[in-house]
Amino acid sequence: MTNSVLERTETAPPKVTAVSNEQSLIKRKPPGQRLLVYVGIACAIASTQVASLKFGHNDKAESNAPVAATPAPPPIALTYPLDELRTKIEAVSNLKGLRAGVFALDPSSGKYVDYRGKDEYAAASMIKIPVLVAMLQAVDRGEIKQDQLVEVRQDLVTGGSGWLQWRPAGSKVVLKEVAELMMVVSDNTATNMIIDLLGGKEKLDGQFTSWGLERTRINNLLGDFEGTNKTNPYDMVYLMARIERGELLSGASRKWMYEVMSRTRIRTLLNPGLAPGAKIAHKTGDIGMMVGDAGIVTTPSGRRYIVSVQVERPHNDRRANLLIRALSKMIYKCFSQPAVTCDDVKEEPLESLQGPVRHSGRHHRRH
Image (cartoon, rainbow, N blue to C red):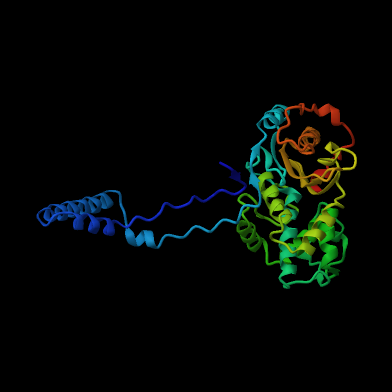
């Protein structure tokens, strides 16, 4: 049976009408035997009522029960689980004090790998991906315009990464520039301005749920250095899979989103694991307790896959950065191939991807 990214409902069995079956049974009996059938039916009804009382059945309460929300349509079939790659990812990620989550999929073939991808992690600046999607939806609906001015209010100014925190309170900035700053340099004040413009964190959380995101929510405005805002690799891949399929956003908004995400300044996580010539539209997140990266990769041959990796860590432990690089290299080797298996991918030691990693007491507050 083919699994899908979102299989949260089951087909209800056909309704059986008991009365019609009983009437049919009675009509088939000779007149002399119909009394026995009536008696049997009466006993069955009585026993059903007794059972209902015994187990606390309440028709009125049941009719007033809330109806579950209809899930969003699945954006991609998860057809081929890469179990051998998952095992190797688990082996590489088995480092004391680190907790890694990985989800990656190839939309064209349905092959995917899931290693703790549905666990919950601090979102850090990865929360800016769904915030951007919500903003572009509002643009598509005509509720806001990218060329409108947004005010830098003092109550929205915050520390960490970004430039808008240094602008005088009351300054006006074009919304398109605010969104670009949010994604390209991970500006926290810009993010707060957009969240406020869209109606606040509670409204956005409702939108995230309506898209099918189960673990993504904004609990506090940025900078959220304590990691109270949440998401996971599965939700990030699920969201980008819907966008890649042409859902949620107009074609123009999707194209602009990819273009902006391709200019992300921090390129020290997933990027080093890619081959020369590969491209990525992505967003990183980096606080003391978690580092992560999520994006859409295009190989030189034109193959595309969606990947998200998050690593929970002891404060600023740079092994987490190196682990994401190693996992990115393993995932790229597998997903750049047309085959739906990748037995030849080897476990990648962290030392093979050493290089410049931003690391300082200040850096953990940037993203």
